[in-house]
Length: 336
Image 1 (cartoon, rainbow, N blue to C red):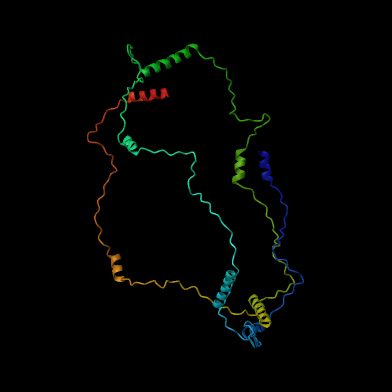
Image 2 (cartoon, rainbow, N blue to C red; image 1 turned 45 degrees about the vertical axis):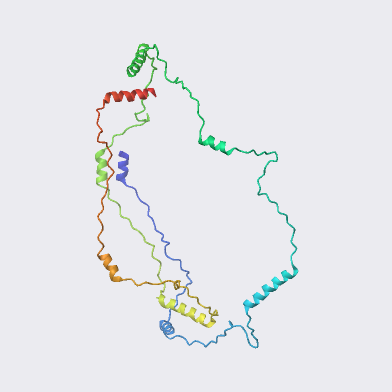
């Protein structure tokens, strides 16, 4: 720690650094900036040039000079063509194939089947007048035989407790041989045996933090600005330059001309489609407003609450023996 403190007090000599700024744009040394005549530019914009007269030749219409136009009834023409096709099919005719009909709707009955006559009166009498059944005797052997046997009442809980106590007593009498165990404590930190601990001078350390050393002055050379020594800079009106470019593009498009497309008919389908059978009724605004501002008086309603449990008037409460109930639950779990 003393060595570190000495190095902090001695300090370190820093190397001089130079900053190379490459953020400036790269300009070709042969680039020349010309001065723009603003008066001539503004006059060219405010006083537009005289345009040449152009003639438009419309070739969209069909050529009909010297041609005769005959009006044709399209519907009558189509009907004539259809009628001719029908007449030709009738004149030629069509040879039809012979067909045979196979009826499979009748039920399939075995030829060896014989049908007997049923006596309906005897059948109906057997249904309406049931036969007399014979008397039968039932022998119930489900109950256990208890004749001459003596029944002893057994306390199931006490019996189970006796069995458990006997098992515990036998395990205590016999005993249990335990295995030998060894405890390995790995909670202590692992420290290298070659580690040496030095004493730290706390006063010198704190003084070095609270009273920082005096730093040496350094000089910085800023070379980020572009070199403009000996260069001539001309101020350019950017707005006027853009206007000149746009004016030139407009003049070139006027001189070349633009071929116009023939006009097409515009079909406006923005209007809503309303059924001709729709009828509009007049609304009584006064009655509508009065119905909103003065609402009608509502009828009184009664609410029937059936959420409470239904308890018979003859129902009584009995005291419960909690100990017996717990013993019964435990015995039921032991049976499972």
